[in-house]
Image 1 (tube, rainbow, N blue to C red):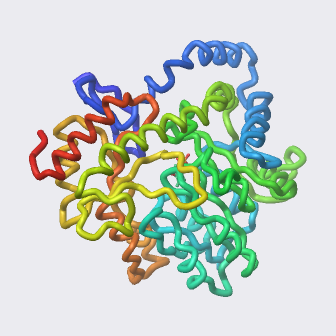
Image 2 (cartoon, rainbow, N blue to C red; image 1 turned 45 degrees about the vertical axis):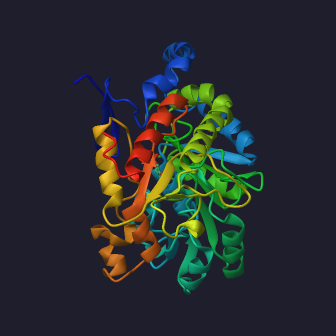
Length: 405
Ligand SMILES: *Cc1c(COP(=O)(O)O)cnc(C)c1O
Protein backbone atom coordinates (compact mmCIF):
# COMPACT_ATOMS: atom_id res chain seq x y z
CA UNK A 1 0.00 0.00 0.00
CA UNK A 2 1.42 3.32 -1.07
CA UNK A 3 0.37 5.35 1.94
CA UNK A 4 0.36 9.10 2.04
CA UNK A 5 -0.24 9.63 5.72
CA UNK A 6 -1.21 12.67 7.69
CA UNK A 7 -1.33 12.30 11.40
CA UNK A 8 -4.74 13.35 12.60
CA UNK A 9 -5.17 13.63 16.33
CA UNK A 10 -2.50 11.04 16.95
CA UNK A 11 -4.15 8.56 14.61
CA UNK A 12 -2.75 7.93 11.21
CA UNK A 13 -5.60 8.99 8.96
CA UNK A 14 -4.02 7.82 5.78
CA UNK A 15 -5.22 6.95 2.37
CA UNK A 16 -3.71 4.96 -0.40
CA UNK A 17 -3.75 5.71 -4.08
CA UNK A 18 -6.70 3.36 -4.57
CA UNK A 19 -8.95 5.22 -2.14
CA UNK A 20 -11.76 6.53 -4.30
CA UNK A 21 -12.78 9.54 -2.18
CA UNK A 22 -10.40 10.57 0.62
CA UNK A 23 -11.73 12.68 3.50
CA UNK A 24 -8.97 15.16 2.73
CA UNK A 25 -5.91 15.41 0.53
CA UNK A 26 -3.62 18.09 1.89
CA UNK A 27 -0.86 17.72 -0.68
CA UNK A 28 -3.42 18.24 -3.46
CA UNK A 29 -4.88 21.18 -1.55
CA UNK A 30 -1.49 22.91 -1.37
CA UNK A 31 -0.41 22.10 -4.93
CA UNK A 32 -1.69 25.37 -6.48
CA UNK A 33 0.42 27.29 -3.95
CA UNK A 34 3.62 25.30 -4.20
CA UNK A 35 5.68 27.77 -6.28
CA UNK A 36 4.80 30.72 -4.09
CA UNK A 37 5.38 28.63 -0.97
CA UNK A 38 8.85 27.62 -2.14
CA UNK A 39 9.71 31.27 -2.83
CA UNK A 40 8.39 32.26 0.59
CA UNK A 41 10.48 29.54 2.20
CA UNK A 42 13.61 30.68 0.34
CA UNK A 43 13.05 34.26 1.50
CA UNK A 44 12.45 33.02 5.05
CA UNK A 45 15.63 30.93 5.02
CA UNK A 46 17.70 33.81 3.66
CA UNK A 47 16.19 36.32 6.12
CA UNK A 48 17.70 34.73 9.22
CA UNK A 49 14.56 35.86 11.09
CA UNK A 50 13.25 32.56 12.43
CA UNK A 51 11.28 33.93 15.39
CA UNK A 52 8.92 36.94 15.25
CA UNK A 53 9.31 39.67 12.67
CA UNK A 54 7.26 40.92 9.73
CA UNK A 55 5.67 37.63 8.72
CA UNK A 56 4.04 37.43 12.15
CA UNK A 57 2.85 41.02 12.36
CA UNK A 58 1.68 41.16 8.74
CA UNK A 59 -0.29 37.94 9.18
CA UNK A 60 -1.90 39.33 12.36
CA UNK A 61 -2.88 42.54 10.57
CA UNK A 62 -4.28 40.73 7.54
CA UNK A 63 -6.39 38.35 9.64
CA UNK A 64 -7.65 41.28 11.78
CA UNK A 65 -8.72 43.10 8.65
CA UNK A 66 -10.39 39.94 7.24
CA UNK A 67 -12.30 39.36 10.50
CA UNK A 68 -13.12 43.01 11.05
CA UNK A 69 -11.54 43.13 14.53
CA UNK A 70 -9.10 45.64 15.92
CA UNK A 71 -6.32 43.18 16.81
CA UNK A 72 -5.05 39.65 16.44
CA UNK A 73 -2.30 37.86 18.33
CA UNK A 74 -0.89 34.84 16.51
CA UNK A 75 0.14 31.86 18.64
CA UNK A 76 1.49 28.33 18.48
CA UNK A 77 -1.82 26.40 18.12
CA UNK A 78 -5.58 26.65 18.51
CA UNK A 79 -5.28 24.98 21.89
CA UNK A 80 -2.75 27.59 22.99
CA UNK A 81 -5.05 30.33 21.64
CA UNK A 82 -7.79 29.11 24.00
CA UNK A 83 -5.35 28.70 26.90
CA UNK A 84 -3.80 32.13 26.40
CA UNK A 85 -7.24 33.77 26.18
CA UNK A 86 -8.35 32.15 29.45
CA UNK A 87 -5.08 33.24 31.10
CA UNK A 88 -5.64 36.81 29.89
CA UNK A 89 -9.16 36.63 31.35
CA UNK A 90 -7.70 35.52 34.72
CA UNK A 91 -9.39 32.13 34.85
CA UNK A 92 -8.06 30.04 37.72
CA UNK A 93 -8.91 27.72 40.62
CA UNK A 94 -12.46 28.10 41.92
CA UNK A 95 -13.81 29.38 38.60
CA UNK A 96 -16.37 27.60 36.46
CA UNK A 97 -16.47 27.97 32.69
CA UNK A 98 -19.47 26.74 30.71
CA UNK A 99 -18.69 24.96 27.43
CA UNK A 100 -20.21 22.25 25.27
CA UNK A 101 -19.42 18.58 25.77
CA UNK A 102 -19.86 17.90 22.04
CA UNK A 103 -16.56 19.43 20.86
CA UNK A 104 -12.89 18.67 20.42
CA UNK A 105 -11.11 18.00 23.70
CA UNK A 106 -9.11 21.25 23.75
CA UNK A 107 -12.18 23.40 24.53
CA UNK A 108 -12.49 21.94 28.03
CA UNK A 109 -8.91 20.72 28.44
CA UNK A 110 -7.62 24.29 28.71
CA UNK A 111 -10.16 25.14 31.44
CA UNK A 112 -9.01 22.14 33.48
CA UNK A 113 -5.33 22.97 32.95
CA UNK A 114 -5.85 26.35 34.64
CA UNK A 115 -7.36 24.68 37.71
CA UNK A 116 -10.90 25.76 36.83
CA UNK A 117 -13.93 23.56 36.29
CA UNK A 118 -15.49 22.97 32.86
CA UNK A 119 -19.28 22.85 33.20
CA UNK A 120 -20.78 21.01 30.26
CA UNK A 121 -23.89 22.39 28.57
CA UNK A 122 -26.25 20.67 26.19
CA UNK A 123 -26.36 21.26 22.44
CA UNK A 124 -29.25 21.84 20.06
CA UNK A 125 -30.12 18.82 17.98
CA UNK A 126 -30.25 20.72 14.68
CA UNK A 127 -27.03 22.75 14.74
CA UNK A 128 -24.85 20.67 17.13
CA UNK A 129 -24.07 24.01 18.82
CA UNK A 130 -24.67 25.04 22.44
CA UNK A 131 -28.24 25.51 23.63
CA UNK A 132 -28.42 29.03 25.10
CA UNK A 133 -31.29 28.11 27.45
CA UNK A 134 -29.28 25.26 28.91
CA UNK A 135 -26.30 27.58 29.47
CA UNK A 136 -28.44 29.86 31.58
CA UNK A 137 -29.52 26.95 33.83
CA UNK A 138 -25.90 26.11 34.59
CA UNK A 139 -24.77 29.54 35.78
CA UNK A 140 -23.68 29.65 39.45
CA UNK A 141 -21.95 32.33 41.55
CA UNK A 142 -18.63 30.74 40.51
CA UNK A 143 -19.28 30.98 36.75
CA UNK A 144 -16.73 33.24 35.12
CA UNK A 145 -17.35 32.77 31.42
CA UNK A 146 -18.78 30.84 28.50
CA UNK A 147 -16.92 29.17 25.63
CA UNK A 148 -19.34 28.69 22.73
CA UNK A 149 -17.84 26.47 20.02
CA UNK A 150 -18.74 27.21 16.41
CA UNK A 151 -18.82 23.55 15.52
CA UNK A 152 -18.20 22.14 12.04
CA UNK A 153 -17.93 25.68 10.61
CA UNK A 154 -21.24 27.13 11.74
CA UNK A 155 -21.61 29.72 14.48
CA UNK A 156 -23.47 29.07 17.70
CA UNK A 157 -26.34 31.44 18.55
CA UNK A 158 -23.83 34.08 19.56
CA UNK A 159 -26.29 36.96 19.95
CA UNK A 160 -28.30 35.04 22.53
CA UNK A 161 -25.19 33.71 24.28
CA UNK A 162 -23.62 37.17 24.44
CA UNK A 163 -26.87 38.56 25.92
CA UNK A 164 -26.84 35.88 28.64
CA UNK A 165 -23.17 36.61 29.36
CA UNK A 166 -23.80 40.36 29.59
CA UNK A 167 -26.76 39.84 31.91
CA UNK A 168 -24.62 37.78 34.32
CA UNK A 169 -21.31 39.64 33.92
CA UNK A 170 -19.51 36.74 32.21
CA UNK A 171 -16.90 36.71 29.46
CA UNK A 172 -17.47 35.01 26.11
CA UNK A 173 -14.52 33.24 24.50
CA UNK A 174 -15.49 32.01 21.03
CA UNK A 175 -13.86 28.71 20.09
CA UNK A 176 -13.74 29.45 16.37
CA UNK A 177 -11.09 26.81 15.62
CA UNK A 178 -13.37 25.19 13.01
CA UNK A 179 -15.08 28.37 11.86
CA UNK A 180 -12.77 30.95 10.35
CA UNK A 181 -14.84 32.84 7.78
CA UNK A 182 -18.21 31.89 9.33
CA UNK A 183 -20.55 34.82 9.82
CA UNK A 184 -23.62 35.55 11.90
CA UNK A 185 -25.75 38.29 10.35
CA UNK A 186 -22.69 39.30 8.34
CA UNK A 187 -20.33 39.65 11.31
CA UNK A 188 -17.40 37.24 11.58
CA UNK A 189 -16.83 34.45 14.06
CA UNK A 190 -14.25 35.78 16.50
CA UNK A 191 -15.56 39.36 16.31
CA UNK A 192 -18.19 38.97 19.06
CA UNK A 193 -16.59 37.71 22.29
CA UNK A 194 -13.84 39.10 24.52
CA UNK A 195 -11.63 36.82 22.41
CA UNK A 196 -12.02 34.52 19.44
CA UNK A 197 -9.66 31.54 19.21
CA UNK A 198 -8.61 30.12 15.84
CA UNK A 199 -6.56 27.15 14.68
CA UNK A 200 -4.61 26.67 11.47
CA UNK A 201 -4.15 22.95 12.06
CA UNK A 202 -3.99 21.32 8.61
CA UNK A 203 -7.61 20.06 8.65
CA UNK A 204 -9.10 23.50 9.34
CA UNK A 205 -10.48 25.74 6.60
CA UNK A 206 -7.35 27.93 6.63
CA UNK A 207 -4.79 25.20 6.89
CA UNK A 208 -1.16 25.64 7.81
CA UNK A 209 1.80 23.33 7.20
CA UNK A 210 2.02 22.38 10.84
CA UNK A 211 0.55 23.77 14.05
CA UNK A 212 -0.45 27.37 14.66
CA UNK A 213 -3.34 29.47 15.94
CA UNK A 214 -4.48 32.99 16.77
CA UNK A 215 -6.65 35.03 19.11
CA UNK A 216 -8.76 37.94 17.89
CA UNK A 217 -10.12 40.74 20.07
CA UNK A 218 -11.55 44.24 19.94
CA UNK A 219 -10.14 45.11 23.37
CA UNK A 220 -6.67 46.75 23.21
CA UNK A 221 -5.96 45.95 26.90
CA UNK A 222 -6.69 42.24 26.40
CA UNK A 223 -4.61 42.24 23.21
CA UNK A 224 -1.65 43.79 25.03
CA UNK A 225 -1.95 41.26 27.86
CA UNK A 226 -2.15 38.38 25.36
CA UNK A 227 1.06 39.60 23.69
CA UNK A 228 2.86 39.63 27.03
CA UNK A 229 1.52 36.20 28.07
CA UNK A 230 2.65 34.80 24.70
CA UNK A 231 6.27 35.28 25.82
CA UNK A 232 6.22 34.12 29.46
CA UNK A 233 4.50 37.26 30.76
CA UNK A 234 7.68 39.18 30.01
CA UNK A 235 7.61 42.98 29.61
CA UNK A 236 10.18 44.45 29.29
CA UNK A 237 12.65 41.66 28.54
CA UNK A 238 13.45 39.58 31.64
CA UNK A 239 10.91 41.43 33.79
CA UNK A 240 7.83 39.27 34.39
CA UNK A 241 4.56 40.80 35.50
CA UNK A 242 2.58 37.60 34.83
CA UNK A 243 3.33 33.91 34.40
CA UNK A 244 2.75 33.18 30.73
CA UNK A 245 4.18 30.57 28.43
CA UNK A 246 5.93 30.07 25.16
CA UNK A 247 2.97 30.47 22.80
CA UNK A 248 4.98 32.01 19.95
CA UNK A 249 3.81 31.72 16.35
CA UNK A 250 6.40 30.59 13.79
CA UNK A 251 7.04 33.22 11.10
CA UNK A 252 7.31 30.49 8.44
CA UNK A 253 3.65 29.61 9.13
CA UNK A 254 2.81 33.30 8.75
CA UNK A 255 4.60 33.48 5.42
CA UNK A 256 2.78 30.37 4.14
CA UNK A 257 -0.67 31.22 5.53
CA UNK A 258 -0.50 34.75 4.06
CA UNK A 259 -0.35 33.14 0.61
CA UNK A 260 -3.59 31.24 1.25
CA UNK A 261 -5.61 33.81 3.22
CA UNK A 262 -6.77 35.81 0.15
CA UNK A 263 -8.33 32.59 -1.25
CA UNK A 264 -10.13 31.63 1.95
CA UNK A 265 -13.60 32.87 0.97
CA UNK A 266 -13.33 31.22 -2.46
CA UNK A 267 -12.33 27.94 -0.86
CA UNK A 268 -15.25 28.19 1.58
CA UNK A 269 -17.44 28.77 -1.51
CA UNK A 270 -16.22 25.45 -2.94
CA UNK A 271 -17.15 23.71 0.31
CA UNK A 272 -20.61 25.30 0.19
CA UNK A 273 -21.00 24.14 -3.41
CA UNK A 274 -20.17 20.56 -2.36
CA UNK A 275 -22.62 20.83 0.53
CA UNK A 276 -25.34 21.97 -1.90
CA UNK A 277 -24.59 18.92 -4.09
CA UNK A 278 -25.10 16.59 -1.14
CA UNK A 279 -28.33 18.33 -0.23
CA UNK A 280 -29.74 18.17 -3.75
CA UNK A 281 -28.70 14.54 -4.35
CA UNK A 282 -29.55 13.10 -0.94
CA UNK A 283 -32.33 15.49 0.05
CA UNK A 284 -34.74 14.13 -2.55
CA UNK A 285 -34.53 10.58 -1.19
CA UNK A 286 -37.66 9.60 0.79
CA UNK A 287 -35.61 8.31 3.76
CA UNK A 288 -33.72 11.59 4.15
CA UNK A 289 -34.78 14.59 6.27
CA UNK A 290 -33.52 18.10 5.64
CA UNK A 291 -33.81 18.98 9.31
CA UNK A 292 -34.28 17.35 12.70
CA UNK A 293 -37.82 18.72 12.81
CA UNK A 294 -38.80 16.54 9.86
CA UNK A 295 -36.91 13.51 11.12
CA UNK A 296 -39.83 11.26 12.11
CA UNK A 297 -39.54 7.97 10.25
CA UNK A 298 -36.37 9.01 8.36
CA UNK A 299 -33.06 7.19 8.33
CA UNK A 300 -30.71 10.07 7.66
CA UNK A 301 -30.70 13.77 8.54
CA UNK A 302 -28.72 16.37 6.61
CA UNK A 303 -26.92 19.23 8.39
CA UNK A 304 -28.98 22.34 9.07
CA UNK A 305 -27.89 25.92 8.61
CA UNK A 306 -29.34 28.11 11.37
CA UNK A 307 -31.05 31.41 10.59
CA UNK A 308 -28.64 34.29 9.98
CA UNK A 309 -25.66 31.97 9.49
CA UNK A 310 -23.16 31.48 6.71
CA UNK A 311 -22.02 27.87 7.26
CA UNK A 312 -18.42 27.27 6.18
CA UNK A 313 -18.64 23.45 6.22
CA UNK A 314 -15.38 22.58 7.86
CA UNK A 315 -17.26 19.30 8.17
CA UNK A 316 -20.39 18.03 6.44
CA UNK A 317 -21.95 16.03 9.23
CA UNK A 318 -24.99 13.86 8.71
CA UNK A 319 -26.94 11.90 11.32
CA UNK A 320 -27.65 8.23 10.69
CA UNK A 321 -30.59 7.08 12.77
CA UNK A 322 -31.42 3.69 14.18
CA UNK A 323 -29.61 1.19 16.39
CA UNK A 324 -26.16 0.46 14.92
CA UNK A 325 -27.07 2.08 11.58
CA UNK A 326 -24.24 4.62 11.60
CA UNK A 327 -21.67 1.90 12.13
CA UNK A 328 -23.15 -0.23 9.33
CA UNK A 329 -22.89 2.71 6.93
CA UNK A 330 -19.31 3.36 8.08
CA UNK A 331 -18.42 -0.26 7.24
CA UNK A 332 -19.88 0.14 3.74
CA UNK A 333 -18.05 3.42 3.12
CA UNK A 334 -14.80 1.87 4.32
CA UNK A 335 -15.24 -1.06 1.95
CA UNK A 336 -15.85 1.38 -0.92
CA UNK A 337 -12.72 3.43 -0.15
CA UNK A 338 -14.67 6.49 0.93
CA UNK A 339 -13.18 8.66 3.65
CA UNK A 340 -15.26 9.59 6.68
CA UNK A 341 -14.84 10.71 10.27
CA UNK A 342 -16.78 10.49 13.51
CA UNK A 343 -16.62 13.82 15.30
CA UNK A 344 -17.15 12.97 18.10
CA UNK A 345 -17.77 9.42 19.33
CA UNK A 346 -17.88 10.38 23.03
CA UNK A 347 -18.92 13.57 24.82
CA UNK A 348 -16.37 15.33 27.01
CA UNK A 349 -18.71 14.82 29.99
CA UNK A 350 -18.19 11.07 29.45
CA UNK A 351 -14.39 11.22 29.35
CA UNK A 352 -12.46 9.40 32.05
CA UNK A 353 -10.20 12.38 32.74
CA UNK A 354 -13.15 14.68 33.54
CA UNK A 355 -14.74 12.42 36.16
CA UNK A 356 -13.19 14.77 38.71
CA UNK A 357 -15.61 17.43 37.42
CA UNK A 358 -18.67 15.35 36.59
CA UNK A 359 -18.49 12.61 39.22
CA UNK A 360 -19.66 10.41 36.34
CA UNK A 361 -23.15 11.80 37.04
CA UNK A 362 -23.72 14.29 34.22
CA UNK A 363 -26.23 13.24 31.60
CA UNK A 364 -26.59 15.13 28.31
CA UNK A 365 -29.03 13.13 26.17
CA UNK A 366 -28.90 15.34 23.04
CA UNK A 367 -25.09 15.20 23.06
CA UNK A 368 -25.09 11.43 23.63
CA UNK A 369 -27.52 10.86 20.74
CA UNK A 370 -25.31 12.98 18.46
CA UNK A 371 -22.27 10.86 19.44
CA UNK A 372 -24.16 7.72 18.32
CA UNK A 373 -25.48 9.15 15.05
CA UNK A 374 -22.96 11.60 13.53
CA UNK A 375 -20.92 10.85 10.46
CA UNK A 376 -18.77 13.38 8.59
CA UNK A 377 -18.31 12.77 4.86
CA UNK A 378 -15.86 14.30 2.35
CA UNK A 379 -16.41 18.04 1.74
CA UNK A 380 -12.96 19.54 1.05
CA UNK A 381 -12.55 21.90 -1.95
CA UNK A 382 -10.16 19.59 -3.82
CA UNK A 383 -12.74 16.80 -4.02
CA UNK A 384 -14.40 16.68 -7.42
CA UNK A 385 -18.15 16.90 -7.82
CA UNK A 386 -18.12 13.42 -9.45
CA UNK A 387 -16.60 12.11 -6.24
CA UNK A 388 -19.42 13.70 -4.24
CA UNK A 389 -21.81 11.84 -6.56
CA UNK A 390 -20.00 8.62 -5.79
CA UNK A 391 -20.39 9.18 -2.05
CA UNK A 392 -24.11 9.90 -2.62
CA UNK A 393 -24.50 6.68 -4.65
CA UNK A 394 -23.06 4.66 -1.78
CA UNK A 395 -25.25 6.34 0.80
CA UNK A 396 -28.39 5.92 -1.34
CA UNK A 397 -27.45 2.26 -1.82
CA UNK A 398 -27.28 1.94 1.95
CA UNK A 399 -30.66 3.66 2.40
CA UNK A 400 -32.25 1.39 -0.19
CA UNK A 401 -31.06 -1.56 1.83
CA UNK A 402 -28.54 -2.97 -0.61
CA UNK A 403 -24.96 -3.68 0.34
CA UNK A 404 -23.87 -1.00 -2.15
CA UNK A 405 -20.52 -2.72 -2.32
C1 LIG B 1 -8.89 22.02 16.25
C2 LIG B 1 -9.65 22.50 17.42
C3 LIG B 1 -9.02 23.06 18.54
C4 LIG B 1 -7.55 23.02 18.76
O1 LIG B 1 -6.73 23.52 17.77
P1 LIG B 1 -5.23 22.98 17.61
O2 LIG B 1 -4.63 23.94 16.64
O3 LIG B 1 -5.31 21.58 17.08
O4 LIG B 1 -4.58 23.03 18.94
C5 LIG B 1 -9.82 23.59 19.53
N1 LIG B 1 -11.15 23.54 19.47
C6 LIG B 1 -11.79 23.00 18.42
C7 LIG B 1 -13.29 23.00 18.39
C8 LIG B 1 -11.07 22.43 17.37
O5 LIG B 1 -11.70 21.86 16.35
